[in-house]
Amino acid sequence: MSTPRSNVVVMKFGGTSVEDATAILRTVGIVTGRLRKGLNPVVVVSAMSKVTDALLACAAAAHAGRGDREPALDISSRLRVRHIETAARLSSGERLTTLHRSIDEHFDSLDELLRGIAAVGELTVRTSDLIVSFGERLSSLIIAAAFAEQGTESAHVDARGIIRTDSHYGKAAPDETEIERALATKVLPLVQAGVIPVMGGFIGSSPNGETTTLGRGGSDYTAALVGGGLHAGAIEIWTDVNGIMTTDPRICPDALRVKTISFEEAAELAYFGAKVLHPATILPAVQKNIPVWVLNSRNPENEGTKITATPQSCASPFKSIAAKKKLTIIDIVASRMLLAHGFLKSVFDVFDKHKCAIDMVSTSEVSISVTVDSKEALPAICEELGRIADVKYESNKALICLVGEDIRGHSGIAAQVFGAISHVNIRMISQGASEINMSFMINEEDVDEAIRSLHNKFFAAPDASIFDVEARATLAR
View 1 (cartoon, rainbow, N blue to C red):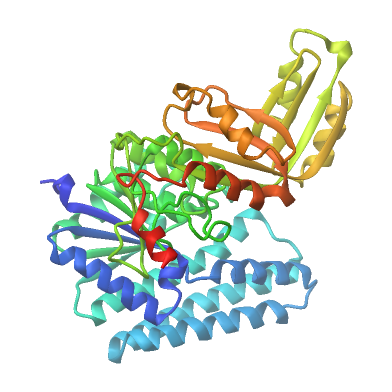
View 2 (cartoon, one colour):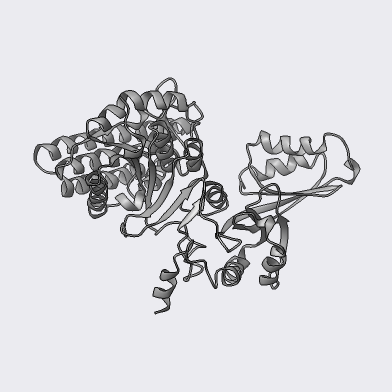
């Protein structure tokens, strides 16, 4: 027996959606609403808001303490109190007693780890993964208990028993075959029995059973992996915004909600700076053609944004504008290597050696310009490149990315884009293999002005079938 694909909905709630007891009760209400509609929810949760940062601060304090463990234990103590107080607002009686005991056990283990780090003065990536995993492990326990307290049958599932990964600590790669097998044996029976499984995102386990993490945005990735493995009918990403916007509303208050967007467009936006989704989130959904919804837990009645393989066509050339800041341009000039075989390979081998991703590339016969967001490896990279070329770099740059369907098919689109920002100095331009992305580099200080000018140019008269124009009318009033 298998659960009908159309009935399974994987619901991921971010840190702001589970930040306190009030937010968690709101989340419980949203999930039980899906249950009443005949859907079978599987819940994936992040750590409570700012808990991951606090756990990283614990680890750093213990490492820097050189035997002084008290600063780290102070942070841990405050986190313990926060979780216990939240649990006390959500559970009662024997359930609360059991939950309180479990929270204490988790923090006792964390404190023991911190004492060990302070004693030996060493913090490995593997230990760091274990420390930050406490956030999701604790939030999922508290939220599972909250469901039960509200009369909804639920079960806490340790994500480390489901999300199988390699041993690349800090950014582990999932084993989708093993994940699907674990879901079939540990999660699917719960779903079929009408029980809501609740698990933490972001965390997994290596082949030898040690705790790993999926890296930045890992909770979204967990939701997509679970959705793909269960052949879900939908994946819902619940956050604190009404969906994907035409640009950052903090820069443009008149930014619009995008009603529907393609997987490819959403992935481009996510990679190039949009904060709503992590790029890897899209991949398992694309593979299984599962629609992804981006929704607002603070405004659950809003329709959000639907991400799908075949979105509705749009009259506008663009769906959204994203910006990625804190980038560096590296110029590599080697006239003596003019047309030399293997020069490009030598250059990119250096970036590969230092595991440094490149955002944009521009080449001529004697030079290459690339953009990177990794400053840690920059001195070593430039030193190695200096052996084969003249190298210089400029920091404090930003990449502006305009995403839309079939950009190449719109005549004069480049003229419109650069005409709208003629007052801004452009450092690099790219419209490569992708037909849905036009990107260029500018100074960080010019980002807000450039985005406002572009937004005014391309979204002044939006297509109501694709964009939420009522939002703009509301803002105007």
